[in-house]
Amino acid sequence: GVQLYRHLIHPSVYPHTLAFIGFNHGSAQHAATSVVSAVWLSALWGGDLELPPQLHMDRVVSQIQEWKRGNMQFEPSRGCCVSNRFQQYLDVLLLDLKLSPFRKMPNILFEFFLKYTSADYKGVVDEWLTRLKQGRREGVSPPLDFTT
Image (cartoon, rainbow, N blue to C red; front, side):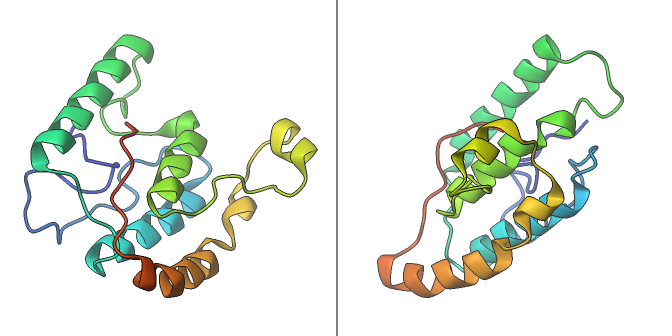
């Protein structure tokens, strides 16, 4: 299947005004991934997140495809789906936005021992809006060099 950068945009479609929220979700965390993805795209389209060069995005997409081929059992959605690795995917998007991926803090025990659910991401939009007010003074955020 088609692999997208951050599971949202195709690196060669420029300008990046076409995105696919929900394309990568094969998990029960569909609501959380859709919301965080929408915030990430709003940051990109609002000029508050810059993309790396296309060559870099192509390399990241290739690395993801290779990892999936070597580490995932056959799944019909293997080409595009995050499935049970949704938490790591959301961590990367949140870090790109300079938001904390630690959703259960300040309770460190909960952070280590309780599973994440969609409810853990319910404040992301408000956190982004607060960050956006601060970030406009700090400049544009480049995405981190993580593969997801």
